[in-house]
Image (cartoon, rainbow, N blue to C red; front, side, top):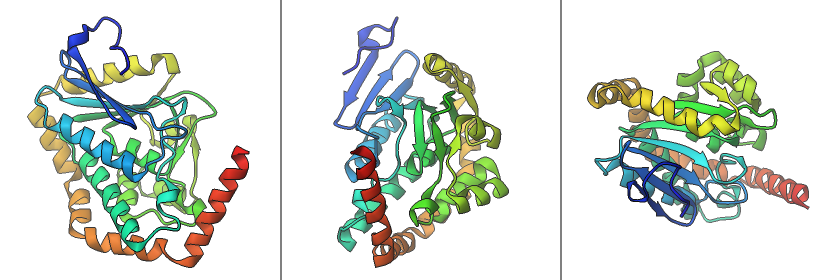
Length: 276
């Protein structure tokens, strides 16, 4: 486990770690940090998503915890998004299990009672961008090399309606429509301009800024903030809950098409060539 932040007594910073995510709770402030540590790119595999949901549920059920900061322990990447190997060359049953886990992750995070802050310290395409969009506040490192966006269209995949709804609620209909159709990946500066992130900071200031933002949000009475959040997000959450199985079947039918499988195989080959 990583050492506690400077100035915090060891007893107040309780880590519970698993293979792919490190969770630390500072009981004095009621703020947890969830660090993604699944190299090389923190891809959202079934195992990663399962750990994510378990970690979030533990924090949700801990009365000491009022907020959580999401960040990466892997240099230059927040999360590369959904693990393509989970969607390529597998059984229909596997695709359904994987997609239900993705839904669960979003439902838990978008509907969380806690204050959620994304401290985006690297590139964050596709599902990585979704995690950031789902948080209450997004801070990104000011680095011209880092990109963020829902780029599913570039892979021949269609972002589902609840990805789209989350995006529209964050940046507005026109920006979301153009960005989704083009599968755009935006620089940090462009992401700030479009409202995908709320502010940019130098990397050395990221954790300090995330803690300051969290303190600002936690200064409000929890019940008022939680009820307001629920009111703002309920319709979008309810829509997925009402159509959950239909959404799973749509995903399974789409991803198992030979044309889509071929497109994913080509993309994986391209990634292999890049690595070599």
